[in-house]
Image (cartoon, each protein chain N blue to C red):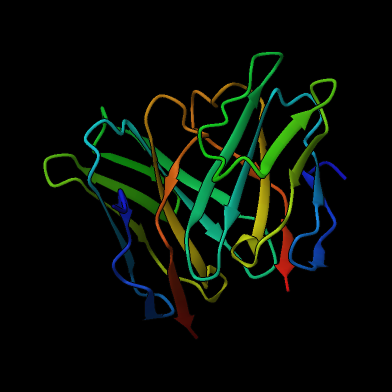
Amino acid sequence: DQQVKQNSPSLSVQEGRISILNCDYTNSMFDYFLWYKKYPAEGPTFLISISSIKDKNEDGRFTVFLNKSAKHLSLHIVPSQPGDSAVYFCAASNGNAGKSTFGDGTTLTVKP
Amino acid sequence: GAGVSQSPSNKVTEKGKDVELRCDPISGHTALYWYRQSLGQGLEFLIYFQGNSAPDKSGLPSDRFSAERTGGSVSTLTIQRTQQEDSAVYLCASSPQPYTANTGELFFGEGSRLTVL
């Protein structure tokens, strides 16, 4: 039973447009959610996170939305840039944000 | 460098052999995590060290896997009698607190790619 799911393995958008990456979870005990970005042959790097007491967190071009009733979160990137092309992982945790359950990732390609 | 350092970056071994993977966390970081990523999948939690506390081994897939952290710094992940299904990228991460209260951020190394033939 996969507790964190990223149902879209890939997403392609045009430079300057919005990228929306989605993530669903099943465990209602999760109280912290994170997004990581990963380039080939590198370790994941932290992007943005959100606590379950909030429904939105914004950092520059990146915004994460959390819908607890739907057990769904999304990452919005506006405007998308070619350098954003990477694999994006959604992660969720209960109590210890470092001990997270990760989704399988979505590969984002931003076309110039 | 200032980041998390892992070695070796690549390891090819024969089935049944033992392997050791090393992680040198960011100086001053008290928490250390091991994850692994199999091809096309997400990261899978393996083990967590926090200071001098007993490690959280709840993610280790079998008793062939073990890890230690010496002096609260460098960590070694050991896989005994390797199997082909152990082939994956093993990622180490550290953080300055048990969990970073503000962001939950982990700082990952580049990983050690293990291939078991």
